[in-house]
Image 1 (cartoon, rainbow, N blue to C red):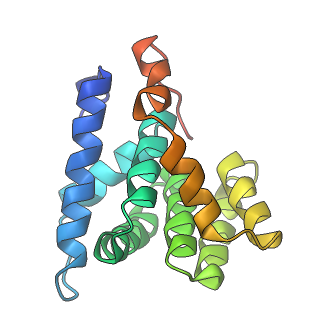
Image 2: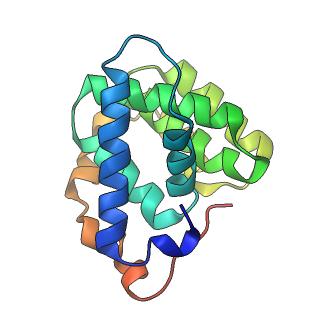
Length: 165
């Protein structure tokens, strides 16, 4: 997917929705190899702040264990195969999914990997602080539920697409 291929909020919503549908489908199957194209799309989406945040919002509010399992599997593989500049965003997203699934220990491992390659990655610090303070994942879910996707993508409409790396 070329960087210029996602130019409007509508395109971004469609891209994120497609990835969420694909990780959900993958999560419902027995362990098998991931589609390399899915992993590439996932890494592309996590590499931009608006699409990363929209992806996290969609993964957080669905209350779908199969989707979360698929996201964890896909993000785990993405972190393994990512170029160095792609690791931090994918690892931070993985940490959030693991936290939401109730596995704080695995979330900390993902955060360690994130901070190993990018010590100042702010999302990792946020999630780490939540874990340190014993904040339950449903607080995150509540915050994400209240977020309007249009607000998440507001910067895109203004021409800003911040990079995560």
